[in-house]
Length: 76
Picture (cartoon, rainbow, N blue to C red):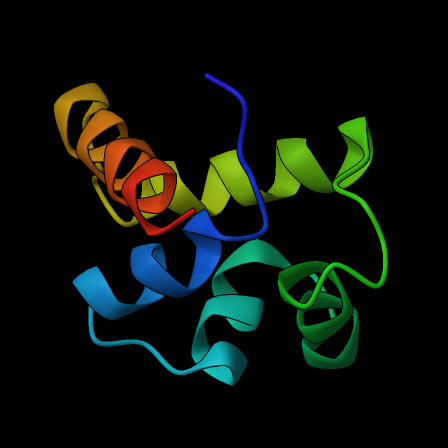
């Protein structure tokens, strides 16, 4: 699965996390996470790896991530 910037706020919302809290889980500075979520920078392989590690820590399963991806597609 490929993460998109539009998915990240939904991922955070599913666990009731602020951007700052999710940044702590991912090890990505909050300002950089904001840039990713707003599309100012793309999700590089480096950031993708960090985000997937955070998603794993938060115990998301594939079904949940697929549902989030579908929701972001519906919003477009």
